[in-house]
Image 1 (cartoon, one colour):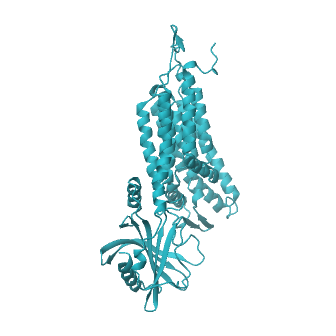
Image 2 (cartoon, rainbow, N blue to C red; image 1 turned 60 degrees about the horizontal axis):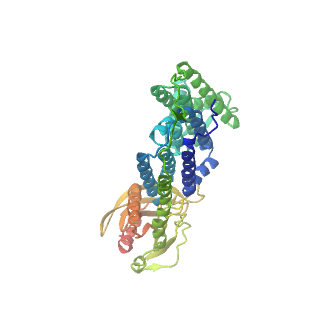
Image 3 (cartoon, rainbow, N blue to C red; image 1 turned 90 degrees about the horizontal axis):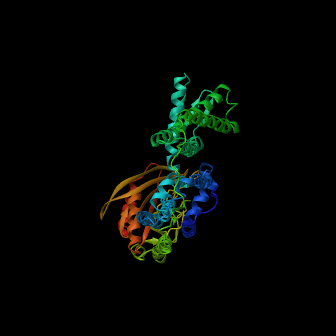
Length: 499
């Protein structure tokens, strides 16, 4: 009997090549891989990522009978796909879009394996390879929508059961007490865990692609409904017990116990449609047939070209990003055009402050007895978390003890150069309001559209253009509720220095 642990002769060279390209992929994109692992480590929602690669390796190993006697060969189609994903990674890296980089690097790994093994072998292990994409920590963007759904589900169920409830956003008020649907109540953890387990279950227990697709869809939709039901049951337990139960740690325990029950029920019901394993009565082709050894068509020259194609993208990104770092300067014409600039900062208790700024300039313009301010920031080559366009670039940090945002919206202003679209925000404290205008300038183009900004940044960096990428902020003090005079001051100042 042939030892299943023995690597057939025609698989030795492909196995070495596979190890080589996987190591190259891990090493040259290590920053992106470490960002994935870092999110696994700090977020329990994505802790399942640690198990994805081992599960994929186990699924591939158990299918070895399907490809053991096949011959690996270089796939040109896979190589083209790898180049496309490399360009996608480069684009995402140049404009600092982390999640796209993470998707792309997993795709590069999958395409590298596909390139080495060829189309026939890859088709036999396609699911375990695609399963690797579940390593990417993705889904937090849907948390607000899931929170709103859970709040609406609770309110609907409470009213159907005759219990009055007052809803204000995600805050619910019952006669027995108050509840708040927070991020942990969104059900994202249940959704990701259910879908991950459901995909593996469908692959192992069904042979029909339709059955697999239906089960995976149910595994995706069921936890959304179940989480709403779980949240409703917890509110009811708290309501019936006069807020003595389900308001502390037991709240979380009840949730996971209920989720475990739902998963067991899903798998139990799914077992009724389980397919019997397919038994191939045709004997497999032996490694040596009629005295002719099966040989791999893979060549080391192709493997080296593949490794170089993988390694080239981070090098190219470093070169293009380096141009931006060299040009991290504020153009001097801004200062020259501010004839009434004052170095003395007003004592307002607030000024713009952002992470990752490599160069900035701050001017204060005196207009009679009122001061206004211009702040221009250049983020250079944009470190991770310190990008020009970043959702964390708050004018006022969350839960600030003094300042809060009354209103923030996009609006048009009319200047000497024509109408401009800016982001207008009103900050308020107990003593004063501050009117803030913000927009971005990419190579001479002013905009507040963040997608357009990313596109402009990408075009600039791919072409080696090192012109400045700036965030421009104008702000001035205004009495509570009176903003028109403040707008007029900012228009005059913008015409002088910025428009």
